[in-house]
Length: 403
Image (cartoon, rainbow, N blue to C red; front, side, top):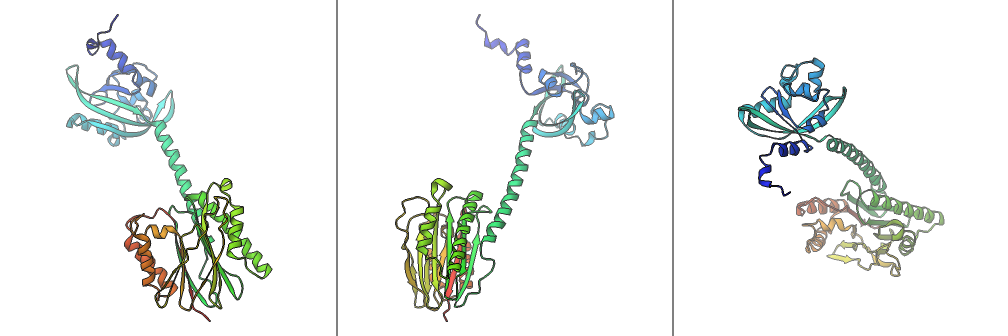
């Protein structure tokens, strides 16, 4: 038989089916929270001992901790004046202003045992049985709130771990400006998400040579930082081996060994790097790059040299272009090594003019000391940039002061 949908609205049986099958607890009460009607979900939510909760107050019907402990109805316990539910519903009743999903956190006695519930309630003033009463909807959000609290605790722990990882990452950088004859050194480092994939270092190999490198691992966070740590440990080992042998490793040798030891298939990431070996007595240097933004030399007589002879990224395999090249530092020259995070935010992120603005900034500071150049270039970045950096920012400046 066909159902006449137009008659369902006026069907008491239909309305009873509708309300009793809602997950939301619904009840009608007066200004003192005395219940006049309720649906089955009310009983499911609060599971009262008496299945007929008509003509008793919400506190007793629901097992509210305050009503149970003091054995008093709503409005008469010692804490009712501070009850969010009671005060909100009274306001709704007298001001005729609807309540929209207000939160309530409270302990209820369910089957005689205390249980914390996280609820949301909505209320409307209605006419029922020729009286003004409150129509109240109660939503059980306990599982959602418990899940949110668990996630919050986990996120707080992640933040703590990230802070610790950031401290570890910073410990990988030079602890202080190295005292190396004939050069002056300064740097700046700022991770993006507390911990990232940028690492650089400078070594005194012997009385003649100093070496340095800067690498930028793809991605951010702990995974990128862990790969950066492993690469640093590997290069540290090469430095120690070089000290034992009495001669440092050449940049192209380091690059080729990194290519073999850090394949993409093993670490699921790649990185760029530049390595430099400098004769501090003559200013002669050799360098090798693997996909890294090119270092720059600036100095007297408007010198500006881009060291852009570069191989491809470490980790992609089949890399046959990892060789080294030569350059000459004169007294007063500065070798600037950096990561693309610095250039990306030397203005608006991704702007085509950022690189040229960065180069102009370096040229304008070519006569400054290493320390002042670092301070001023970072100040220019902050002045030009208008966004929070999403990539690590590293800058290393080596000034050749000569014998």
